Image (cartoon, rainbow, N blue to C red; front, side, top):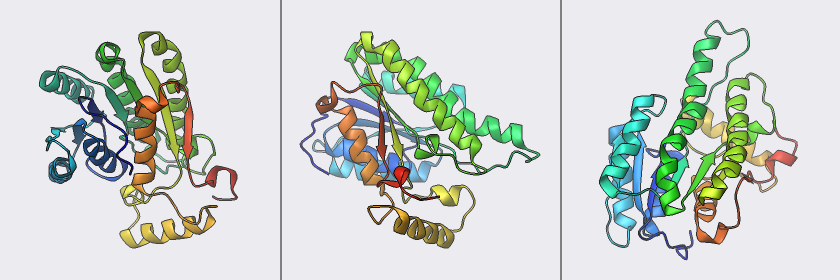
Length: 263
């Protein structure tokens, strides 16, 4: 990761930052001087990420750790309130927390699963954005949402996840129009497969997960699946002044998978 980007004096809130893409993104923002706010549902994981951030921060800044479940409205409000209480500002909001779900249309728990996916992948983003606008307008900040290429390419039995991400893409484009006059940029990143614990979260064992990533990587034009740093690099670019003329875009970072013959 290039350290040419300078986020000194910036306050960056990253949801879903106790592991995977969110954790690596938090570390990279910290490396570039930002004061980061990390949040997730696992206190031990958050504490470990906080240590990594403090270790690379040029000024040794310690992240604000907020144990929260963004699928709960009260936790979303507490997350924003805690950030503003601690730092009196918010410059960058990264809506990264996500919930994967394979669910056939015949599933008897369909509506419960629908609510579970939408509350995390969409409702939380809408509400956190709603709560953040007044603060981001003051700093002329920006928002980066994390979607998926399954918003652009359907996958069998993954319609709940695909729908949530497709809606997130359109939310991003609409908000870019609405918030542009306030000086707030809004963009979305559509990653391909990224080697995290995502597949284990949807039910695969660690061995099955590794095998799936290896198999998928062979199918990708670049010969591998993504790593968390690949997406973190894209996030930092879109959040930086280098992207000051960029808003309302879908930034696909997928190793060429979208246009390749992959499943």
